[in-house]
Image (cartoon, rainbow, N blue to C red):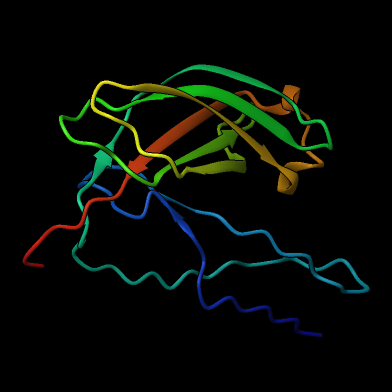
Length: 153
């Protein structure tokens, strides 16, 4: 029996990349099927010129732990190294296993503005990683994205 599951939109992280930079698609889905089946993922990516700047902010002082209600808890600090205020900073961290394969994602949108030169602590909790203990994470890659529209595009 053929089972099909289709998603019309899957989040990408980061959603603006420079040539040679790597991006990740991430989505979780639960399938209710009665037998064991081989699954195949067939992405159909659409690529177009960005309408926002590719802004990255440094993150430091990472600490991973098990969350209070399960899942992964990540704390750290983000710094605005730009000369202008940054708003709606999205902090996304891809989690990897020992083989270097992505195994999960934690994220947060910092809604308060970051002034130039300001460092601010953040905390993320992800219930989507509730079956993933912190000690199973061998590495991580954090993406700090600030949004600024590019005029004229």
